Image: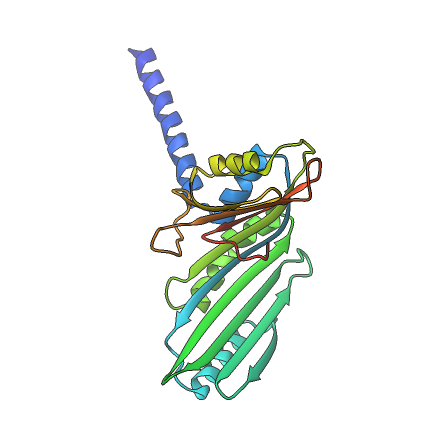
Length: 245
């Protein structure tokens, strides 16, 4: 009886641990999910990465409202370097900050445009860097989320994009590598462009919640190579790629 109780308690602890691990995995940001899978399963080198959030705001109706919002942001982010431009029907404010310790770059963009009889405004906040390390992971899970709560009034669209290279010199056709990436992200191919040295695939994966179209496409993968034996570059984005490729 004692042994049975001990076994049940031990089994309960194991199940609790597994449940907590699963919960943590689900709560990870898209960029950490993507990079974690890439680094664990494929011999690759992470290059540039970007995470940015975008929201359409209805709080700006006049140039005065625009200036008021800019001043508010300047007070909130005094370490950022600000520039503003104003045309007859378009006002833009841009701010940037580069962390001297991590070399991570943050930027803010507020854009207001006159369209017919009303003003359309967008707020964009972006964090980007080169390669990937624990400092970036800490920032994305902490400061990035906190800044979004301050900057945006609702739930902004969030875009994640990662560029890198395969470190192998194996003469593998691009199609095989694209299939490997789709399998890695448990994704189903929906649309594609396939050439001998370039592939672009739009897919659907239950791993990511952000979507951009009515078809719920939420993952885009692009691969390019100069030929067999040459390194293959890739870009992964959710819900779409935001880098040039």
